[in-house]
Length: 169
Image (tube, rainbow, N blue to C red; front, side, top):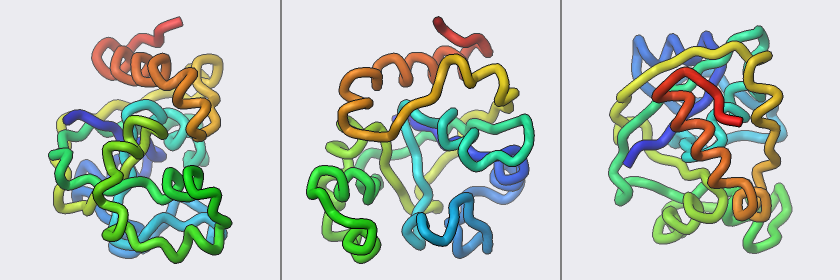
């Protein structure tokens, strides 16, 4: 299955040179200490790669990496578990993703995000983009309701841009 990883230009180039590493393996994190990704995992999306790239970019460029993964290797994004169970940030931090592995496709189909262990990813493409070009097309909130209403638009936006370099309207 084809999914995407959005990141900043520096991390995107490092991934293309060295492969995917989790935040511990890379000794870097895209997020603040209050919002940490799970150790041992890389996050993927079918819809929100631009959002994640813009959120972690410090300059004017972002990067989207297209990957091929096997669905059996996926885990749910803990944000999905948090939202469906109405958990606090503190409770979410304690989630063991192995306990929820069976919900990976629910996470992808209802939130548009999943995670995977880095050694299970095959990179199939890489593109850079100017952040100013995407702002008018993509400014989502990553919620169950947003994905239900606009997930199809964001998926089409990502796949069309990756294939053609053009943004849909």
